Image (cartoon, rainbow, N blue to C red; front, side):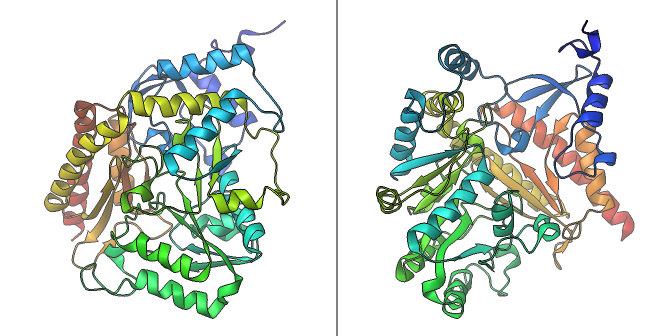
Length: 450
C-alpha cells in the first residue's frame, strides 16, 4: 500500500523539501547547506511556493522561462505530442524534429541543427564539430564566460566554477573581454583601438594561426556580468576569424530567442556566426532541449564525413514539439516587439538608478537582458563584493528583495533584471521598485560604514 507521503500532491511543503534534501542533490551547492524553496505552480511572471505565496519571477528561473510560467499554448502543444509520440530514437525522422530544424535555419540564416538536451551539450558538440571540420585543436574563449558544466564546456568557460575541475580538456586558450566598464587595457570606449579584438590576433599569432579551430564567445556574456560589447566588436571579430580561417561559434544559450529582442543577440550587430549554440529560450524551459546550428560549410563537411557524436535523446519529439510552439509564440504574440518596448522602459529606469544610487557603478542592458554592477565607491569602482565572493551589503540587498517575494539572480557584485518576456509594465515596475528599496538600504549601509 502506498502511503500519503508517497503520493504526488499530498505531502506538505516541509516534507517535500526534506524529501528533496534527503534523496536528491542540488547544483552548485554544499548539500548540507541547501535550503531549497518548494515550487508548486505558476502563471505568467509569477510562481507559487509551498506555502501558497506568490513570487514575481525577476530572473525567469535560470533566464530561460521566456514565455512565462504555464503558458497554455505550450502546455497544449506538449500534451498533443505526448498523445501522438512520446519518444523516437535519434536515428528516426519525426515531424517536430524536421519542423524545428527548418525554422532554426530560417531565423538564423544557417543550415542545419544538431539537437542536444541543453546548453552544455550544445557547446560540447560545437567544439567537437569545429575540431573535426578544421582539423585544428585549439579553441579560443574569454575569461568572463560560462559555457556549461560538462568537462569540455566547463574548461571552455572562464567562470571560476571551472577551477575545482581543472585541468579539464586540453587546447583551450582564453582572452580578455569587451568589458568597457573595467577595460583590461585601461581604455574607454571612445578612445580605444578595440584592443579587446586586436589582442586576440596577437594571441592567434603566438598560439599558431593554423592551430586555432574556433573562437567561442557568448552573444552577450550572461552569468559573468552581462557584458554588452561595443557596436563594432562583432564585425571586427568576424573579420578576424575570416582572416585566419577560424570558425566563429556564438553561445546564445542565455542571450538568444527573444531575450534581447532578436532571435540571437549577434543579429543586433549584423554578423552571422559559423555555429550558434542555444538552449534555454529555445523551449522557454518547458522541455529540455539544446541545439548546435551550423552553416553550410560545416553541414556539408558531415555529408561525407562521420559526425562523431550522438545522444540518446537527440531530437526528442516532445522537446522538439515544445520548441516549434515556443518559436511560434514569439512571432504570433509579438514577443520581440514587447521586448523592444519594455526594454526601452527598463533601460530608462536602470539609468535613473545609476544616477541616483551611490552603489550603482554601471548598468548594462539589451532588451530584457540587463544587470546592475554594484560598487562601494563610484570613483574607484571597488566592487560591492569580491570576485567569486559576497559581502554583508550584497547579502542585505538579496535578503530585502527576497523578503518582498521577488525572485532575483545576484552573484558577486551583480544584480540581474531578466524577467519573463511576457511581463507587464506594471509588474516590471513593481519589481524595480523593490530593487530601488534595496539599493537605498545599501547606500545607507555604505554611508554608515564610511
